[in-house]
Length: 126
Image: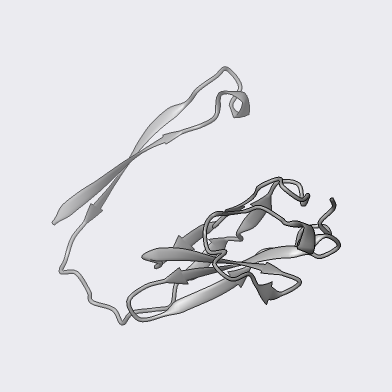
């Protein structure tokens, strides 16, 4: 019916002698099978990067998802939602000093949503 090709590369440092390259071809046959919608699955846990310090931006890497058409963010301070903080970055403010920051990352599709929290940062410092 069709085929799928993919090239695979190894990092130069991971293979003695430098780069290695291979091509993988998968042949597909038969009629497609329709499956019921399923909830998105988080494959790589979301993480926060940056220093938890007033005025220094923190960013979230939403991780990797299977079955998610959209990924959204809700920043939290001591587990409470921060109003309007739904982007990929957040800048701690003076009121956050001594508190821990996390993000609820939600993978969504047309039928379901799955929420995965990040680990909390260290307590925010001034």
